[in-house]
Length: 373
Image 1 (cartoon, rainbow, N blue to C red):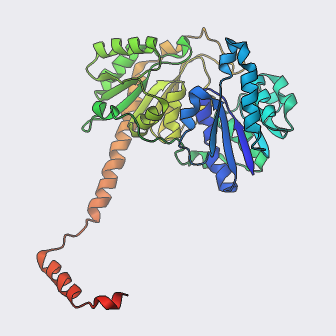
Image 2 (image 1 turned 45 degrees about the vertical axis):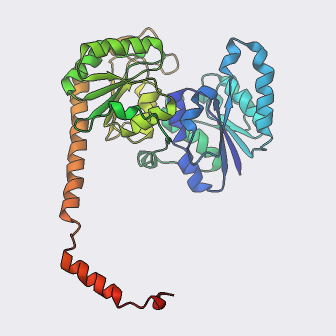
Image 3 (image 1 turned 180 degrees about the vertical axis):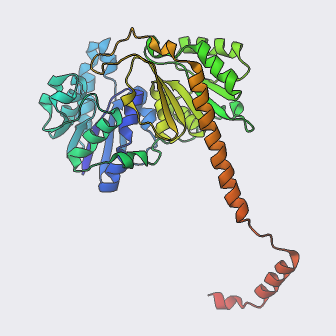
């Protein structure tokens, strides 16, 4: 079976959809799975063993350059030559629907009541129902597996294996890493200013935790904010700009990730690393809360059908709540590590003394090598 998944963007949304891959492969181990994605996010999907081909498009560029439409249509027709048995549109937008239909005739996606752009559902031959205000991860898992006759339970997702992979990351990461204290990644940016927790409060968190806090950034504005934070605290370092491959590697090693509701923070969940996601104008239902993945939400009410970009209530979240939560997560890790070390100590590897080595050597001398062949 050949399956094409269309999930073009954005970073966090792609992460939330990728969890389905391991369950699809478990039920259809011989299936070919190709993923169609905007080229700037392709690196997130690279090295994923359950994906056969990462196929890129540049649809976002069409906003400023309409002459590229023919180029993208030709590109998609080349991909369609793979003759997919099923194309799944996990995005539910008109642009993703058109992309999916250009890839194949048998297309699955959300029904009209489950997506914002209802007209997109007109193009699907298989329609999946999942409430628009339901958990984002559950919605992605449902639309990607139900057309294949697979049901994934809440418990299965909670017990998922890490599903983000990397190779040969930036060696400069090692220069910023500390061995004697915890390493915490701070994700201070996002697509809206109203989703950003105040950098002054991030500094207070760093000073309170007194660990090695590493700021990741994606644009010039975020870099300047990170530099200001470094000037305010001895516990903050600014990372060099990392590509997605190296960002995955950094987060995979982190003791904790603290950040806004944005892609790099959600990558911690995909890597089974502890995290605290800070929510303001967006719904907490975007994520799974687990023993190691926590959330903090401002008191504002959120309408998932119409997000309010002028909701700056994230600024009202008391940093002490985040500090207390972070200390608990870090303490739990320390306790788990101590327990693991204790178990190793209870079953130590016995050293062999010189007499025993002599006995082994003598016994080997008695062996006729011809008996081994």
